[in-house]
Amino acid sequence: MTVTATRGGAGGWADLPGDTALSIRVPEANHLVSAGFPAHVTVLYPFLHASRLSASAHAELTEVFAGRAPFTLTFTEFRRYPGVLYLPPAPEAPVRALTAALTDRWPEAVPYRGIFTPPLAPHLTLANHEGPDTCEAAYDALESRLAPHLPLVSHVHEVHLIVTDGSGGWRDLRTYRLGEGAPERRPGIAHAKPV
Image 1 (cartoon, rainbow, N blue to C red):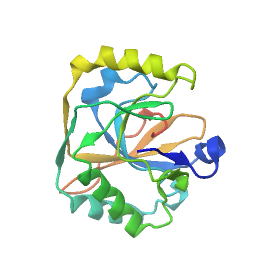
Image 2: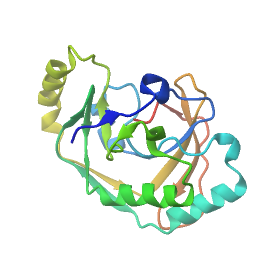
Image 3: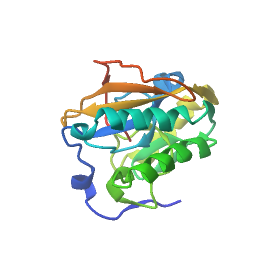
Image 4: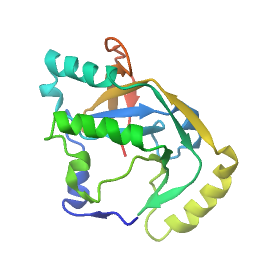
């Protein structure tokens, strides 16, 4: 599949202070990631601006995630977007279902600000630091080095709501459990841009 940016380019991608995202952490893959942030699969970026995260918004998020069962993701192969080496999760359906539930409830939360056509499929970014002249050779070598670590299996029980200061730093706001109860707060954990 070919993905192209339809508007905004780099300017459309810039994180703004107060941008939030919902993501699934995949700690089993942290040792494979050379992109400068923890291994994760983005569910929805950007979500609502932090100023809009009222008690009722958190209650609705709790309800959305409590109504979804935990699931397992398996990562078995490498794929690429322009300039990005990633692992696609299998199955994609549970992640896509979470995204659809969120965008149905909050239609103004357009994945990746609508700059990609078609929208990006669920993915775990391994590397995104190479330029167009070096990425193919660099990512070929990286794939060869990382291949013995696949497949990876991750059991997903929660989704993290994170917020950025707009200068590249991300931190946890809340953690929502799939299939049960109230959100857990985990302040002060740093994150990077969800890609």
